[in-house]
Image (cartoon, rainbow, N blue to C red; front, side, top):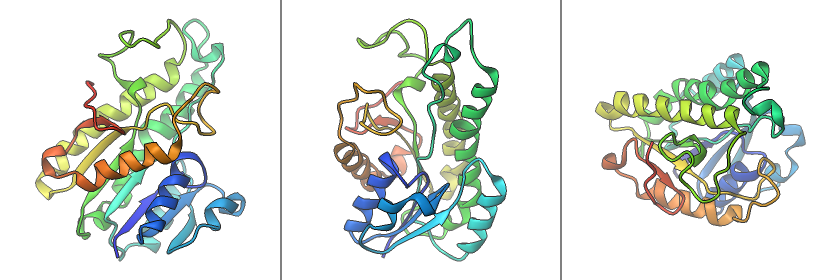
Length: 235
């Protein structure tokens, strides 16, 4: 039975990842900040283990990694993230530096710390894959070129995902000799607790697409940035 480890599994994309992998017979290790409040996650059918892990807390990451130190993890999905403010505190001229640091810790630094902590688990698995849920909003080359782009706003979120993308490229290069495939994915504009009201894409469709890409990925896909439909995204 293959094993998937998912961060931020209590809601949105993480919850749907957990549901779909569990339904397909995988062992699911589902982590979140507050398992006690994750009633929907805990009610999933299948081989689902729910554990407490705040990705911004390095002591918790270490604790969980020690608990699973002898456990092979075929697919590690770094899903947990936060958007930060939607108001003017994310816009140039009034950016809240404390919020910026907070979002950078969640979106840019912590996913790499999770990958560090569970690297040995991935190495001893059959599939050897690490997926990072990023965003097209982090593409530097596409900024201002897509139809829905507007001026201003989202400096905090966009820059945090751009930094994550840069880090994944270094990681993909470093792990290539170990035959570990690093996958960077844009889920689309999905209706989740983190999205704005006009999000149109259902999480089940996005997750099914990303799972297909993860499943079909080979060493030649190492370090590529794709949408949930498989479209390549420029950095």
